[in-house]
Image 1 (cartoon, one colour):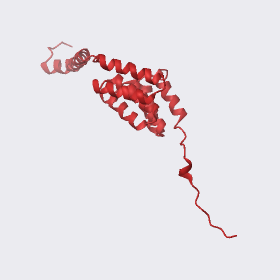
Image 2 (cartoon, rainbow, N blue to C red; image 1 turned 90 degrees about the vertical axis):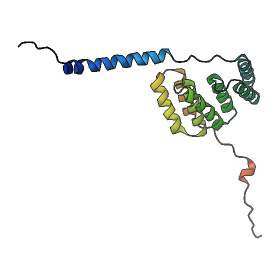
Image 3 (cartoon, rainbow, N blue to C red; image 1 turned 180 degrees about the vertical axis):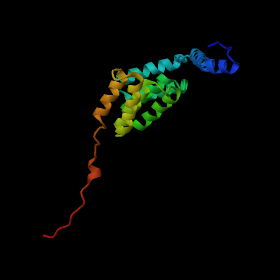
Length: 180
C-alpha cells in the first residue's frame, strides 16, 4: 500500500488532543506557581494571638476570645486568627459563633484541614451529627483516615453533643389541688 501525504485535516485531528492536554498542563502549572503566598501576621496581631494562647492555656476563655477578636481587628481575614478564635468560642460553648469563624476561614481556604475538622466538631457538639459526618467524609478524601484532623473529628462525632443541663426553674411542678 503506497503512503500518501497527510492532509491538514488528518494532522489537526491527530495532534489537537495532545496539544490541548499540554496547554492545560502549562496553564495549571503556571497558575499554581503564581498563587499568592500567605500574608505574614502583623506584629501587633501576633502579640495579641500569643496573649490569647496564654489566656486559653490558663483557662480564661473569655479573655482569650477578647485577645483573638482584637487580633482579628488588627488583621481581618487572617486564617490562623480565625481558627484560634473559632476554637476559643467552641470552648466557650458558643458553637454557632465558632461555625461562623470556621466558615469564614473556609471561604478563603476551602481545603483547610483544621477548618473542616473544627467545623465538623462544632456541628457534632450542636447535635448535627449527619453534617459532621459530611465533613468527616470530606476530610478522609483530602488527607485520609490517619491524619490528625480526621482522628479529631472522628473522636468528636463519637463523643456526640454534650448533655443538656436543665435548671430547677425550668421544671417547676404544676400545683395540684386535692381534697382532704
